[in-house]
Length: 371
Image (cartoon, rainbow, N blue to C red; front, side):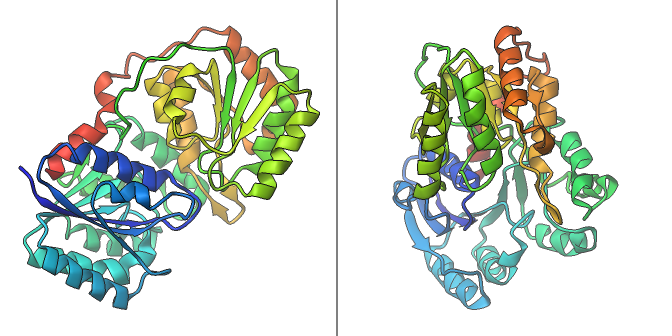
């Protein structure tokens, strides 16, 4: 049935993945005729706000979350009288949002709205001593929609999280067991099928939004001259003009086999056409899996003291499901990247029988639950 829906997104960094997930969910929900949406948005400047305006009224949030901002948003929500509120990632991440999100959750409850969390992966950012507070916020939710297939990513995330030294794998898994009555594993939140495209011989190299992994990108550009295939590099929309110029200069010095662009509105088409995809292990690897692509993955693992484990977990998963080659930060020599690409070009692709079409219908299932 048509309804009034409120969405809350806090993702101010150069990482556009969270904004992309919300846009995919909004696109699926737009199919419900007569529905109205109010979108509270603090998103990367590299991701145009006008894209969200196609799906509802957008309220831009101030620079940082605050209790004052939360009271203002709660007042707007109460006047709108929504049937549902969906928060992106929070409360599994974005703990800095609690002063702002608290009044919004309270107002939604007072309106009788159903409250959903839209979580991009089975992962949370709380430390072991912060789990209790996170679970207290989770108790206010009707459902937590985790956009991965049940039994796929979770054990990999639990194993990799020990890299961060903030929570043990056992404590990590205990959260998901404790919330089993609220959590729904929807499957991956991917765009709908596009036009079929012809596979080509080029190697596609991407690094997500472009806010990390400069060393990987430069090494991959140098590797292009060592492989007998053309390369297309997508630097990411967060890449500065200065860095883009430097990447293009480096590519030109390698003999002209590599083209560097900042971004593309049709990334799924580029992925589909490529012979091999070389990438960090962000959310785009799920599209590569759905499109049955050969992969060389270089997960971004963060810096010392600020380690990240989610990309490492995804890289392990793709290794086991699709034979992806895995290069860690210490392996980022052009020769090693070139060797991995050549190996993937020549070896046949084998996709695990575990992978089912239902794994990629997360947008449809999540939208149905919210509706």
